[in-house]
Amino acid sequence: MTSTSTPTDGKQQLGNHFDLAKDHLLAPANLDLAQLQSVLGDMMSHKIDYADLYFQYSRSESWGLEEGQVKSGNFAIDQGVGVRAVSGEKTAFAYSDDISLSALHAAAKASKAIASQGGEQSASSLIARASAPLYLGQDPIASLSADKKVKLLERLEAYARQIDSRVKQVTASIAGEYEVVMVARHDGVMAADVRPLVRLSINVIAEHNGRREQGSSGGGGRFDYSYFTDEVLQDYAQKAVHQALVNLDARPAPAGSMTVVLGAGWPGILLHEAIGHGLEGDFNRKGSSAFSNKIGQQVAARGITIVDDGTLANRRGSLSMDDEGNPTNRTVLIEDGILRGYIQDTLNARLMKMPITGNARRESYAHIPMPRMTNTYMLNGTAAPEEIIKSVKRGLYAANFAGGQVDITSGKFVFSAAEAYMIEDGKITYPVKGATLIGNGPDVLKRVSMIGNDMALDSGVGTCGKEGQSVPVGVGQPTLKIDALTVGGTA
Image (cartoon, rainbow, N blue to C red; front, side, top):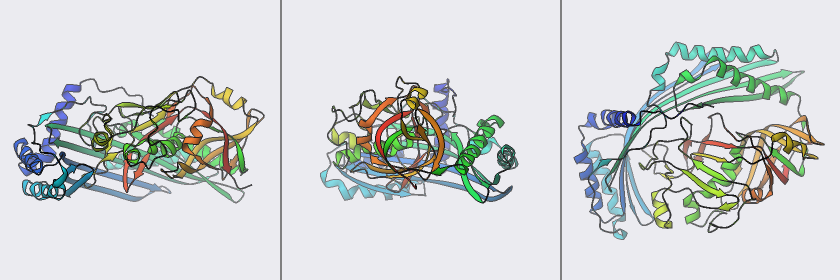
């Protein structure tokens, strides 16, 4: 996790972003703002409500190390433009990997398919919109030579093997992305962003007396590879090995209804999946969320406040602007147990007559935007983590999670614990393996009886999937005590 502060020279960063965006996206095709405005004007003449152009240039790489050797390496460059027209609830969308005036006009013809319902509007003159930069616009791929990237992975492997002789296999990977985006809208807004993103991961397998278990760790954010110092590498290695060794000693997890304590940080992924998706505007507009039509109602225990915050400096889920060119926000979703609002993009906010929250996100220029989470987390309570553990007679402490599934409509979820322990007489005792948490998101919110004062964000590894699109996200929470949650075990 990084604590780097927001870049201070906002005006210079903003200017650099627009210059870079023009150089990467417009200049090679001899495009200018007047031509973009002409395309938008042509689209709006078809009586639609909204139109935008989304330009994107991306360069990405990944390296994989297995048993001391580089087993994979990928490098890709992609660019293109997405052209979107919105009328009422309908969206017409076309995209092209050819950024040219002819391609823009060809894609813009898609607006005719939905022209019958829209109102008459014209395109305004394009004017740059400033968004406070949350990260430096450096190219992480260029921040380290190929040889040094491989050596970084080799050091990470060496640290893991030095910790314990029971570590038998180590795999590690590093990935970086440099993305330049520009949005031009019919209402005259034009915005640009330069987005770095890096991630480092390690997975270890430990073996003892014929038993093999694994552990994993990693992190990243919107900066370059210089973040991964030896201290950071050692921390990742230690956490991955610790998890594997704990699971070597783990007993089968018991099953049944019991008190469950969730650890701080990454266990917030349960919050993201079981509750966060249900607070996205599109699901609530369509009435398919368990939280539909409940604004102003108590949906969680008192003391629970959940926010989605895309404005945290350098975080994996943060954006200086969303993919419609709107500044991201810190949006309070649930406050002291009361539902206050939803995560919104332009389309759903307009139809629901609610404020835009700056949560429009898309995987690439070839995808339409939709309301998505950025960094979603629960705020601190007042209880010390030790006090929470001490209050449990018998229960499960889930320190870390693996995967999970959730049904947005019902809120039902199933999550598997990657690292878990039994709590007996107020103390953490032995580790258990094979524990799954089964419940209902809205119901679980009401069963939270203690909230810790140790809120932490994840280390920067989250990726969220929705309708076939993947985007980077962040999660977090303090230690939580949940009464009477169903645990599926193997004992």
